[in-house]
Image (cartoon, rainbow, N blue to C red; front, top):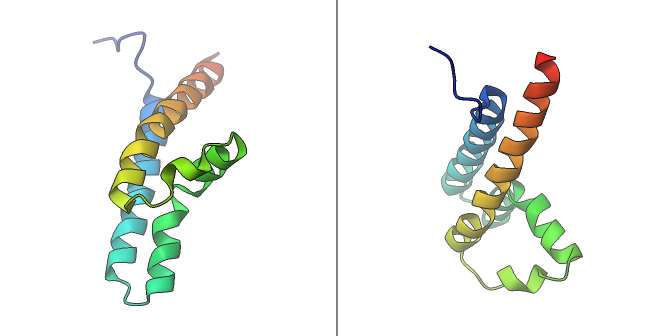
Length: 95
């Protein structure tokens, strides 16, 4: 059975890796009793995205939001970009 043309296994692999890393960091932050360490661990998987929002002037958009809200707002576009990058990388590697 052939895979659909729009499906990219490389994109799925990159997204899965990112989701696994994010889950590991969040679970480690929840298990950590030190508030500073927990904050840093929660911030790690969305740090680049929030920095990019700061650059385009939308950094204040996430201030005061809960971690759940930040993750729900930042993760879908991040996964879309990672999938697109993986699809492009996969097509380059297949040639």
